[in-house]
Image (tube, rainbow, N blue to C red; front, top):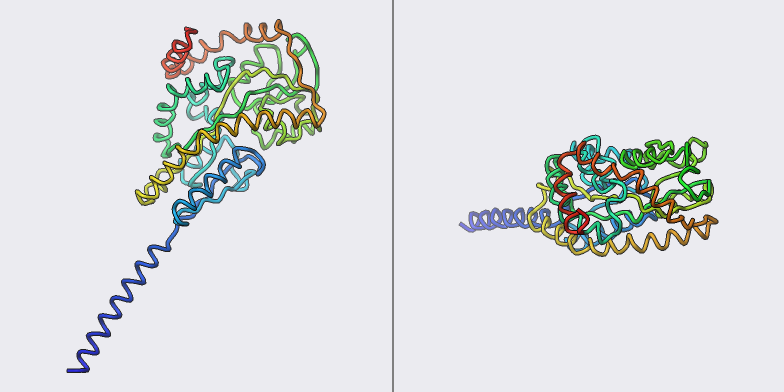
Length: 335
């Protein structure tokens, strides 16, 4: 009888131990994701991503661990990120919207030349565009966690001119088709080149200028190749921090909510970081020896006039863009 009791107690204790062990293992289990980005460690988008990853890890008690792989470590170029997330090749990536227009043309709306003139105007545009971007993400098996704009755009060049004619035939790197059309319209020779190939193109003399932000100018140490910065503020674009939906659905609802809440909370801080990055980077370009050109009013007026038709052209080419663009222009009383 005692033996039977001991056996029963032993069996029960073993069952309890096994249950406790299983519970502990479940509590300790964690999810680890890599985040792919082409931007270097010092870039503010990368800094934002690292802060986001750190806060998610803390808020989830280590259950969710994200590791930012900067500088294209995972082998993906910027234009490949939408597909890489869609196909599950990487669970998360920092996606530059304007580089995905080959798959999703609407993602190029922000870069229509001179459509958006400031970060405040961009916020108005996002009221109409963001829901459509969310639909595009879902269609591509992913979810947008947060979006952060690049700061104002510049032309970084070797030459100093005071009229558009002086830019004729200058070969310049551009990040997307809208910028290519814009600079072709003013007589330049724009070439579509991903960021990872831009510095070699400058070093080899394949291009004599770059259309990009001051932040990228610092990333690329443009003062080693170029001399002048033109504050044209001609286009806008955003990085979208996207997650693969299959990977997302494997998370518990509690972890999902924590990540979503943090993304919403931190996004305004990340936008503020964009503005600060522009100011700091422009100062660094000057420190490196570059001169910020005071563009004559007649030159910028001619720039706008020669590219004015591109808004209508874009709406015809991408019909889905017409509604958000018209709503945006109506709110700004520019319709």
